[in-house]
View (cartoon, rainbow, N blue to C red):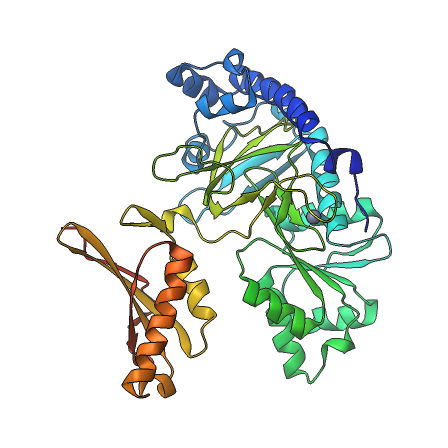
Length: 433
Ligand SMILES: [Zn+2]
């Protein structure tokens, strides 16, 4: 198994922390000196780079949010003059203006190196033919993977997105061995193969690098079975760099975050307090080497958990779990943070549960109550009472183990939960007056 940059990826933690500390201090100084938004925030919080005596002092610095980027649209967050910027990308905003990010020549070089690390970790080598089916454009996905794959020495096919049948023809004729796209597009390709009467063995694919959207372990299994490949996950966001912030190794036990370039923290999205290692919460990232667009404590809104024990692959870099939803979706029930996606994961694993459910929050006196209404198939819905009760208690036990609180489960008839534009309304909160 290859490691692209063993000196950096297998560094002892004390050495890594020394490196992080030095680069963090420089980043804080540069951000303060060159970006009015950071200057204002630091002054308001009464902190300066000199207050950083230890890495943990980072928690004294203010957060940066998507809103800050919007307020400083387009170039207000840049820490270098535009003449030093050699690339501009942006992320589509769901509301209003997009966010604009810039890269110096050094930034592009670092980005390319990190993607090369990530792709090597997934098993890509110079012998691979890499099929990049992300859309080329302002979005960071395609260009990020493109240059990383070239650096490894792989042969890159910049096919871009769309026209799936043509994609399949190219994959067959050019013998693509590594597929880069979103996990949902990988399933679209599998559907098209089925429709064309072709098996996975008609392609030479052996590995997939999937990112840009959250996906479950069930989806991974489906992609692996249907395309006959090793499906790996990776993580990145344009505000922080793009793809190459973190990626899975072949053991698929969490994405290694490239900590010599980014410091991850996990916070409680409600109180904004930093949580102890191993806690589930919102991922906050600080960049350590970016020149054009440094990010100090950027709130990603992605919910995950970090594991610090060394991986079988030999990398010492922390691993982040697959993201499970966004902090904007978080519910607080009896003081416990609950994400609808956690409930969804449990229900997906129970045979007989349909993928439609509704969460009803209410109050009994001063106590919160959570009811999970689940659509079940007809066999279970019309089953005898005793069997139904057993089924309910099994689902309740599984939910309690995952959520850390008791939820009441109510079985409802198939198709009985109202759909809005094809999607069910997931949460009904009756606790609010
Ligand atoms: Zn590993």
